[in-house]
Image (cartoon, one colour):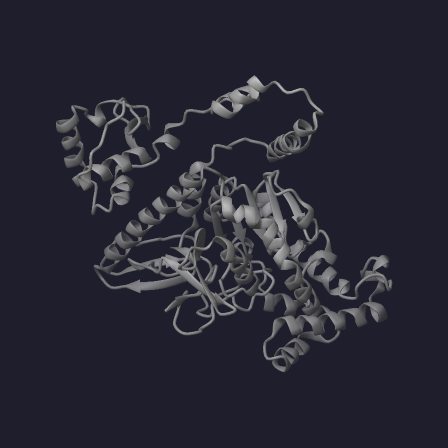
Length: 522
């Protein structure tokens, strides 16, 4: 069995060479419905009685026999705890914001963007040839949507020159401009007009999900989507598109890299066969440019199926440099959308082969993005930071390090620089930045999550470990706020307190369980 994951619908576990729902979405315009016909979900709604439970995910319902509902819910909760822990551990390991690799399924989920086939059919409908020509060419080219798009480009070109001059900018009618621009213009108009403002998304569940999405504050975003929806979600992030990516400084922060172009510049989008051939030639340079991101940050793929050839080829380029001997790219996770229940042990890796080479990335399955987004923002303390300010600071720092100091263009106080290098809090203080002491960041784990990290069936066995530490070391971890444990106020009553645990506590308990020597640090 191999996993070829879809982004917003359909089942993802395939045998042999079955294709995922998104395999025919070459440009990332949209993810589309799965072949099973399900649509994106909005979380779990369960009935009050378990005699005849039906769990609903969006508009796709699955009947569960009496008594089976509790088991499925418990399995999903257990899986979520472990997956949540894996995400948070990866973020802690890298100590930096994640990179998001975002595909068409996200646009499909939040505002119903068209999939590739729907987009082409709509474009045929705008031309004299009509929708019948779409079906004819789809059959003629054996469902090769890139070929169909190339034919569509020729038809748009002929129509523009003969009958539709008033519908396009006059500068398009020049031998200096590629003839594909007419179709690209129509595509960009259609996508731009169909992309809503955030205030127009009135579904409460989706609105909350988008808020959680925005709170991630990723270091950067890479996308093949043409639309500018992400720029609304991640306020202050700068769109970088087309050839500009190759010249851009990837040491900065807060960019959205549209590697297939975007609607603000129709000429930039990758759409026709010639575009894809050109993209194939340049892809190595783009991969090399983005390698720093993939090597130095956690990377989370959302809204893509691994059947997308562009995603596979970029991951192949990255995998050749950073994968281990088994082909695993350890810091890259695929978030797999599932409209159905999550089984107890879904595949924890996604496998894909390119040019005879097999690579693997880790997989997280979900029918609700909210908990995934909450876990991804666990390292984010950038609640009100202005990404433009961070970019300016990074750019100035880079210029100092790479040019001004080595060339002698500035006078250097080496005593200050040594303090910056040696003292963690000195540079923030120098820049007027206050270091926030947030117990929810230093102690992020509930006792249930702590038990899950230790592979315990529930939290009760932790009591024995805590008593053992008290007996052996004379320290009651729960009696004070310390580096392992703290109490956090959760309400107005004196008794409204929650106990939270740190990752240091995880390491301590692991040593105790293994019978190793350990110290309790004050």
